[in-house]
Length: 222
Image: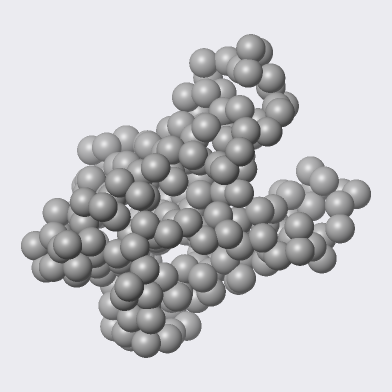
C-alpha cells in the first residue's frame, strides 16, 4: 500500500476484534504499529493501556509513543434495547464516552504534532446507524452521528495543513459477539473486520491524498 511503509500508525481500541484487524493490516504493509486500549492485548506490536475516555490519560499515552503519522480511531461500542424515553443517563453517557469522547480525546492529543509536521492521516469509525435514527438504538445512533460531524469539522480545519480526516461507516461487522447476539442472522451478508481494515488502509495511504471529510459506507451485502 503506497506510502505506509515505516509510518507510525496508532490504533485505538486495538484489543478488540476490529482494532486487531486494523492494526494487523497496517503491520502487514510495513507500518510501525502502536495500539492503545483499556485492556492488554497479545499482539506483535506494543499496546499501551490507557482509558481513552479520560483526556489526561489519552494525552499521556499519545505523548509516550512518539510522533503519530496515522491515527485510526477504532475504539467504540454498541448497546441497544432502550427507547429514547427509557434511556438512562448511564447508557447515554456510556455511548457518548465510548464512541465520541474517545475520538475527541485522541485527536486533541495527536493533532498538534501533525500540524507541526504538516502531514497526517486520521481515520474514524462511524456506523451506518449514524445516518438515520433507528428504534431502540437512540444513544448509539446519536453518538455515532457525532463521529461523522467531528470528521467533517476536523477535515475542514486540517486539510490545509496536509492532514486528511475521513470516516468509515460499517454496517454489521462479523464478530463473535454479534454472532452470539444475533444467531439467526445470515452472517455471510455481514462485513468482515478485514474488509473494514482494507478501507482504513486506503484512507491512510497516498492513494487517498485528495479524499477529505468522506464518510465511506462499508456494508457488505446487508
